Image (cartoon, rainbow, N blue to C red; front, top):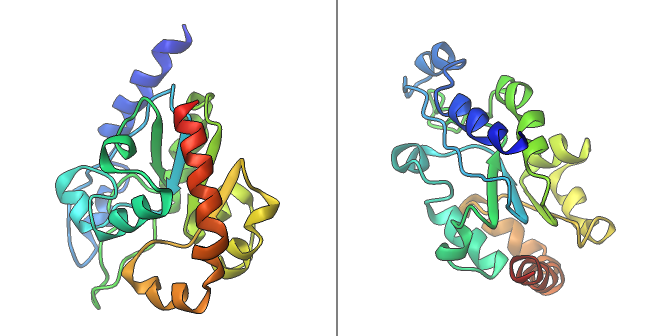
Length: 200
């Protein structure tokens, strides 16, 4: 029965340890802690990068300042954002990748996406709109090789089914100031589409 597939894959991801040695070798030397936040009935897919340290500690996706900004962009509050019956949050890596010796974020391990993502996407058959957050999600879901600015700039070519966003990190505050069209043109239509999907 199709309904049996989801508990199996979420359970599998929750106990995944394929990156244990990789994480142990990072500057943070942490244990894997997959953050799994999706259900088959979700209508909105948020595809991100990877959990940060705060999310690693809380076990809740986008439970940080980046998440606050993302929710502002989407025009929804935490209650709707974390409602797995309507919103699926699927990063390119389910675990925090760790920091390097300089304290910088390490990239999502490719093996995570290679192992899980096709199977996860097969379970999300009710998705009506997809929000791709950051370059890693852009490349996986769209197959693009362009940079984030170029990919986001042509967002209208994919809307309203797909919206491409930069990462909502504070590091991108300068990018937002240099690209006022993002807030003026993209966000109002994104928010309207999110509302339509969640209320549908």
